[in-house]
Image (cartoon, rainbow, N blue to C red; front, side, top):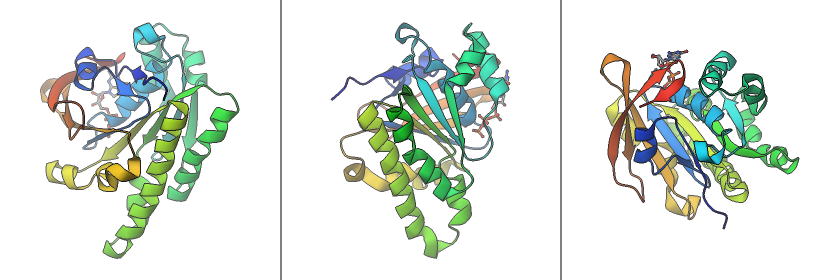
Length: 239
Ligand code: GTP
């Protein structure tokens, strides 16, 4: 088994909360309300994965599966400039995959295998957002079982990529309010035996005062529950 790598989320406090950054060979889920910062963290990670290891990166490329048209190249440029990186090069290391529906999303995730086998040094896969298409397409109680089956297939493919190629997977999940957050998790529903030995991290994002954000680590198998405060600036995520 290859050594687990870590990717910085930009804030020291946030990194400490999750054991040093998001892990390869794992799926990390962030959930929270609209505007809580899920897409902002996705953009940050798409840049930081490219940094040298000493700076919290893995010198790798990223696949960004965009399901709601939230990817913003100009935001990548700002964050890359904040790290004094060549932003054109940073953009060229992000493989954007726009998923038009859930089947397309599933296929795109599976096709990452080929992308890596062709020699692309992918170290991070982002799915922003995981659930949007599934929620829109599988409406009503009678379709819940099929939805969960398709989601399991998708998550299984993502976990297989994470394990096989030592890649980090980062998924976002929009939830409405606190109670749903704990009952509506796609990753929690599939349980330990489906994901095998790999751990899944879940981070709940909340809006705080004065533009601050709070990240709370929940039901993590290895790390203590806890919270940290971070900020979103033009340079990206900071303490
Ligand atoms: P999700 O709905 O959770 O995906 O939210 P998001 O990450 O898309 O959030 P949104 O784009 O609403 O941004 C969240 C916050 O990040 C904003 O309220 C701003 O405070 C901050 N933010 C977003 N974009 C920028 C930017 O370009 N510059 C700066 N300085 N802050 C930004």
